[in-house]
Structures are given as C-alpha cells and as structure tokens.
Image 1: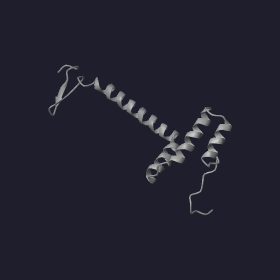
Image 2 (image 1 turned 90 degrees about the horizontal axis):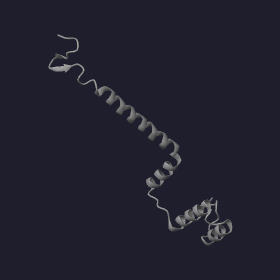
Image 3 (image 1 turned 90 degrees about the vertical axis):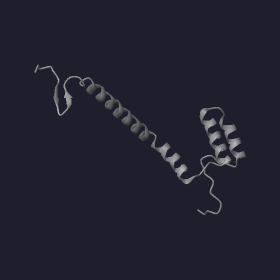
Image 4 (image 1 turned 180 degrees about the horizontal axis):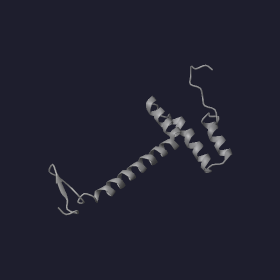
Length: 109
C-alpha cells in the first residue's frame, strides 16, 4: 500500500477525497454562529420595543383611533413637521394633554 492511497475500513473509504469538505463545513458553521449571535444582539438592543409589541399582541389590544391620532401627532412634532403651537392646538382638539395618559372610565386613583 502506498502512503497517499486511500484505505478501506468496514466498507468506508478513508483518505483525502472528503478532506475538502472540512473547511467548507467549518466555514458554514462559523457563519451560522455569527448570524445567530448578531440576531441575539439585535433582539437584546431592541428588547424594550419587542416587549411592548409582544405585550400588545398578548393582550390582543389594538389602538383606538384616538390613540393612533395622538401617536401620529407626537411623531409629526418629533420630526419637526409641525411647531409647538400647532402641536398644542391639535392636542387640545383631541382633549389630550401631552405627557398625561387619560384614565380609563370607572377607575379611581
């Protein structure tokens, strides 16, 4: 038998014919591991947002039209599309004092 010749053991050929796959499999595993870690890091960074979305989904709550209007108004103000005077005028039309969440009817406190 020559030193470089593949040898057989129990019907399986061992030798250099499958050696090219080791770096390929290792590379794919490394990429998979890095993508998994990146995904976990992104989820950790946005955990507050994910928690809010999950809480809404769990409770089955959807936003009312009034809540959506407040959110849109606040976003437009934050982006600088409207000034503070227009923001306050529009929020008063919604009977909303920014920074104060209205209490649900029937709740005391």
